[in-house]
Every structure is written in C-alpha cells, then in structure tokens.
Image (cartoon, rainbow, N blue to C red; front, side, top):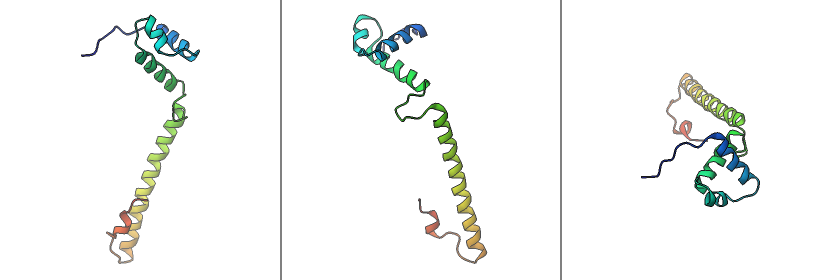
Length: 104
C-alpha cells in the first residue's frame, strides 16, 4: 500500500514548481526535502495543464472548443446518414446499403 502523506499546502507546491521551472531537476529538491521527485513532476504537470501549457499545445478553452466541434460534427454526420436513408427510401432503394455504414 502506498504511503499516505498529508496534503501539502499550495504555497509549498508552488515553490517546488518554481525551482524546477528555474532549471532544477525534480530529483534535486526531492533528495533534500520530503516530497518525491514523482510528486513534484505530478504537481508540475497539473500546474502546466491549469495554465494552458499542455503537451498537446492547446489551452483549456481551445480543448473545450475542440470537444464541442467534434460533438457537432458527429451529430451532423448522423443527420446526414439519416437523410440519406430517407432519400433512398423515397427513391425505392433499400435503406440498408452497406456502403452507407462505412466509416469515413
């Protein structure tokens, strides 16, 4: 079972993050103080994500907009497929043409 520590104060975490952003390796402060190097890396990852410096290069707002646009695209594709089936039915063609269900 992993060791459990009391939650560190935000100011305490911020100082470690500043040390590492200043050029130190997370292992250096971890050797002198209690939090592990992995804990410091986790704090940095969360801080970067919160400040919009994620590895994918997107800010939080851009990521939310991307998710919204993907949902909208999915909805439009489904509507287009349904209209195609109605159109095929109106023309007397089978609505279950396998070509309609191919992923694009």
